[in-house]
Length: 208
Image (cartoon, rainbow, N blue to C red; front, top):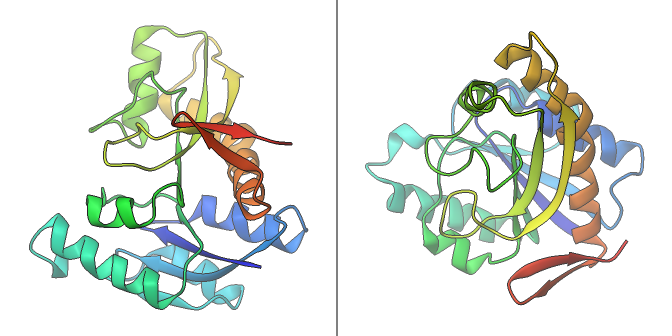
């Protein structure tokens, strides 16, 4: 049984999707053993508490730079004996001291079809604003491994939704969360925990 540590910063809707998936048996071979928040008072911590999952708070504001903060996160991950790290609305880009030690063991969800509308500065509603401004007819989400570059790690799963006439960024965001993120993130976690993701030439190959 693999130890899953989830990193959060806010409301924790993706965390809730993972908790629900674990309870319903969708996630096989793994268990959420700890939730780590970058902010005190994040509602994601309440979600963890309500499900009996231990949590820790490592405030980003307490550290002068990304490197020192990343070292604190790395120490916590090692203490928690993390086999898989899931970024679920975690708003801090981690230094390579973490991404190299946990290479192909950190999963993130990005609310667009990488390589479109991704990289530094593309997060939250900004992603959907950019997609709508470009006039795309489909959008979606990408589940990928995390490496040293923002949104540049190997893609595990992608899913799409149609963009409808009159969509606002908020409406599109909700459609993608409900139809793609909340379904594919638990699926990717389960695949990882069952050792069904192979890395071949830097690409993630899924064995269903």
